[in-house]
Length: 347
Image (cartoon, rainbow, N blue to C red; front, side, top):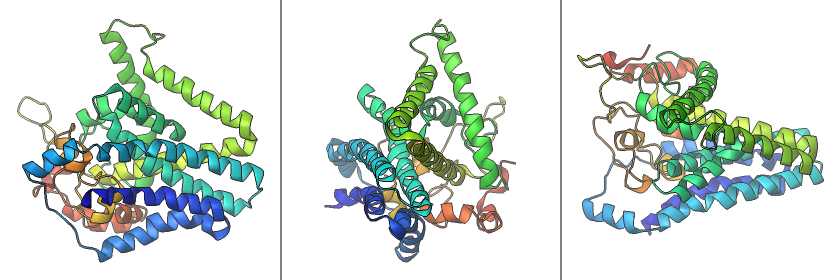
């Protein structure tokens, strides 16, 4: 029965469906649920730092339910996207309703789109990686697959990593540095991969080129089918989606720095180089993304068996709450700066 707890992740698309269906003030139901109700719930409920034993780990790895809970996000995300487009282009909602639905869909694109794509992007099978890339498409963030897997996991907690926030860097500054640096670095990584395989820029193996084609085609199709309003709606929803992702990136590695060895290289990525959170609500809604320390320590581990490490830096609040706090930089700095070990501060 405990395995079914991850169905809580579907509460986000459920709220989005209700937002689209009822409209009016309900248009803002999803952001209120995600960033007001869930943080309050996190403050009420206790944390859980327990880990699985070997028998439990083997059992969960054999249970395909955990995989299917991820796969189900694909029809949910695209179904809500199409439903929202039909509603806003056929039923003439007011401006404030459209704004509410933009944020509602954007949250779905972040939580059930990019977040699930992140998990699937680390899988070994081609089909699962394909599903992951398909979930990145509506957020116009398909390059995330390349930069995250071939860049971030190599350079996390170093100045070379665009997705690691520096000490005393505000989340607003981080949005711009991370978004643009990650995109351009994705091209650099792609070109290196092509050259290492003696392939030209226009090779069919140039994934970044395909991502551009797919994303432009997606926007063109939306424009042709749903007009200017539909185009603006999916574009702004995508922006909300990837800005939320970058907010998560911000809190995951804020201020942490890997030390250099005598050889001049950075030490191996360990469980101390990411912020960990054991708050149960964030854990189940985000498919254990909050146990980020173990994810970086052992990248290949599936979400349902991630562990808590006692020596990992611990966030005082869960991810939903921390995301809200990060939007108030002075408060965020006051809470987090004192928790960073002095020899690990990334300035």
